[in-house]
Length: 286
Ligand SMILES: [Zn+2]
Image (cartoon, rainbow, N blue to C red; front, side):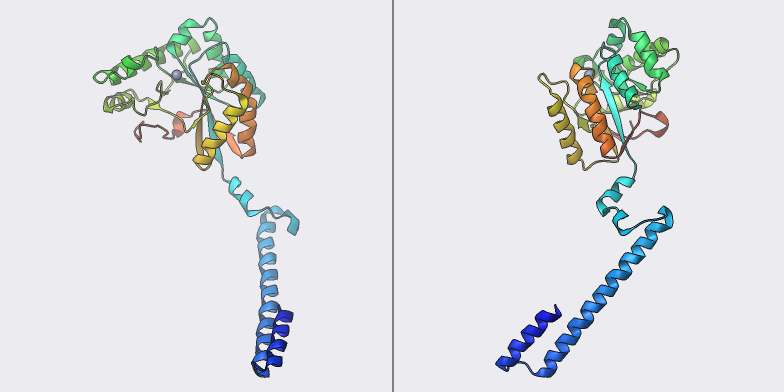
């Protein structure tokens, strides 16, 4: 910088446009700025390093992590949820979750509990190993559950029936969470919210739809859907991923878990003591 200023000054002298005093002043200012800048930089780096070493012991400049990675320090949580079971895939999903020591939330159907020969066994396994069992209604019947007049009553009536069924099958698990079939957005009315509040049942939708239920769903396609949603919502602190008990779900699950691990997310099952609001109907009461 000083050299450039010098050259410039020389040219100007030749042309006789700048007087020598002005030229010396420019060099001096340039020199002071350069030295000052170097000192400031050095001070900043040493100061920065001393803050880091206070907590971390020995560190060199190379050890200072890039600023972007510091954002990952804040804890983030992902809730993996599986709808429409229990089915023959429930045990396979549980096996994958076990391999990674990850807990999930299963929104089971009353009709599926009654229709699957091993449902007692698998629901007990879920409850005994720290997964959460949520309710997904008895029937999954759209017109009955979302009837304009009686929808709220019908919906919660089915949930209460299912709540008892799960309790019997598991030997005491009292579910306090539901997922509305087809989601709560565009289906719930005020009657649903009131009836849920009265029954002390919360309701979760999702913010990431894996689209594993689509015919022709692939591992690559599901991963793209998940990455798209995560990017769209800007990597939220709490994220709920929607799956179903499909064959492709079993296949993609290890990749999904590894994806969230790399992002620094922690895996949690639903916890009624720390309920977070996540519904598409936009109510903070459920
Ligand atoms: Zn469903």
